[in-house]
Figure 1 (cartoon, rainbow, N blue to C red):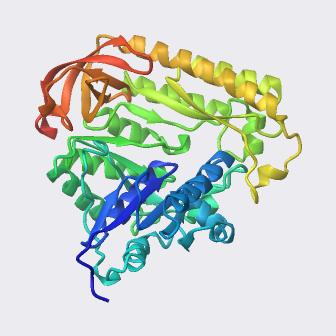
Figure 2 (cartoon, helix red, strand yellow):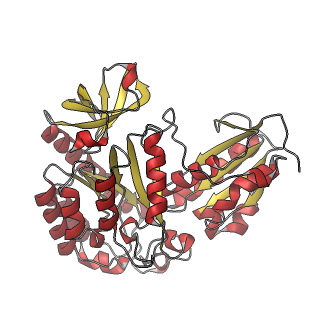
Figure 3 (cartoon, helix red, strand yellow):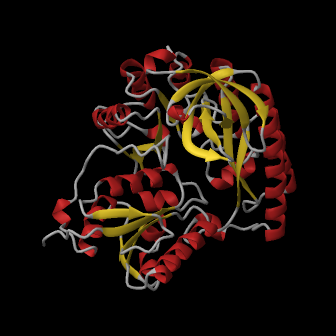
Length: 437
């Protein structure tokens, strides 16, 4: 098959986690010449939709994206991948306009499928180092781990993603150095179960080993860890992070519930006391670390006292923010058939209370950070004519600075609170990872 000279328009849409965003970037990076990537809202010849299935709402949004693409161009080829496509391929295949369904395992082949559907040569697709696109994302996620062997009663993602697999450390560093050479200031290390990185390698490794190598070799200016399960936040990892400024002072540690009976029904592998002890230990070592959590409201069997215990626990631990998920039963998961299903209005009311507490915690956290000198990556995106940014501690910022700082790592002083983040004053530009020593 001979490649066309005429550009073929391809549009991408991605739902869900940072791993999905990294997967979409990898597909895009592998496309052959002759492909023009356009915004999803624009007419395209091929649409690629990377779906999520973490909640019923995510399922619904995934299907809506397929319908939108088909309405935008009924003759376009719609390729659907991701967790919904993996779990329910026949259902996805039956949606009008869907030309191809790819499982998560088949994502490396999607670029070739795009080329084929576009009339280009599939053999021209390539595996290259990640491309840094600061105009779209100044802090790109890098997938270093996939899959999960957890058996949480509510989760459909583990089944869709399969057993844990890790990207070899040398491959991780080739990608990190590649992004660093392109001027990327911060990379987010991402995984479905990030803390399990390295355990399937030969010989087995640990996430702390990878972090130590990051500190030694300094491939980029700043590295952020995405969500980590509490049992993977061991003393070795915490002490390693404590010894450097290169790793962001930000941890996202899924809690789900502060009540042991609910955690047990969820099949979470820890109790509330273990979670609390590790959070306190991390804060003691990491100082101004910002710690956030996921919580689920209205899990089957959750009593009012369990909900109140969760509210009290997040307050007692001084968490900085909450990502709140109202329980929705996922087909084929154990939680869908558990007794004690909580009525919808109660689930929504508890979620609202959790969000109100989360907003209060976030305000308290930001007030405590006022006056702090820290680092931030300045985004290429603006808000009301001002530049936005993201601090070491995961605070969205607005600032007045020179356009030359867009995409750069700078030192800032945190100031007044905004509706969702903080004002910041740029103090200095940091040219190199060594400046963080």
